[in-house]
Length: 378
Image 1 (cartoon, one colour):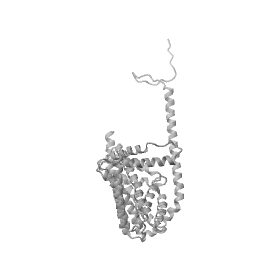
Image 2: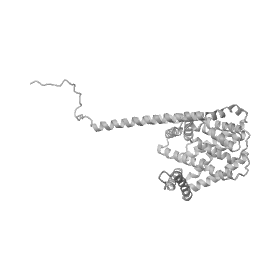
Image 3: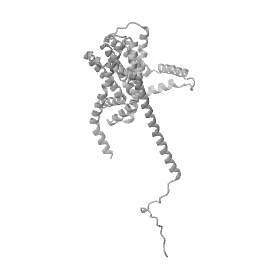
């Protein structure tokens, strides 16, 4: 009896192996659908980035005349007293130390080196790419986790530190607006301005303490913001839970800061006020003596402009906005341009190479630990 065998080669099968069944059609369709969704998501992300880059290019093109006006004043910087640059540099260093202290408290770590190098590197990256806040945040998260801080803790701490810092910035004009509206003559010297900054510092600390531990004031602010939102957006469903949500978010920030909340509040205030004093030193260096309250209002508005994620670090928006606002504060056009250039040189441009150096130092200290951990896992 002859046995007929098929001409098709049979694939070898291991002993005791389960028979190979054809894949379910539904499984194939589901996998194909997931691939298509993933491809659409990637294409959408690429389109969004291209649109964002186009908007950034258009914004820089529109703002280029203002930037060019500021940059043309470079030679005049040589006429300024170098002592003022040292003063601005010292004030900016104190401002950075304050933000490191705030983040250390939120992270609940005693390390200065890892926190400082991560913040400097992330700050530099966020100022060289459009919409760099997200890229800078991701870099800072990675560098902090490489230094040994828990990833979840990093995310919570950085969010809390960012919220309290932003809240402090928005509180500065509220504290100085009454004095500015009264129109009383305020001495324009740097010493008198520093006294004014100290008063704002003290009042801001008391206000922050009230907001952190007393619900009534926070709920009143929430009800006011809720009323304003509902009045200005009548076509949308009214918001009714904003005060309660503010209390919940405030409690989360307070829990993240722990018992050292008062230090975090002092560091947050110091971060902005030292930076403001650096701007005031630049204005004084060019020989102008405007009212410090108006300068603080102009500074607060300019820092809000810096948060616009269209150009890297608010480039162009800050120069144009701050120059115009200082002119409204009583600074002549030429002095405003030169003082903004001196201030941005110390606060914006100088930290860029420092951030690159910080990244190298961070990698040198913690890179070996990271490779060792990877080898251990492998």
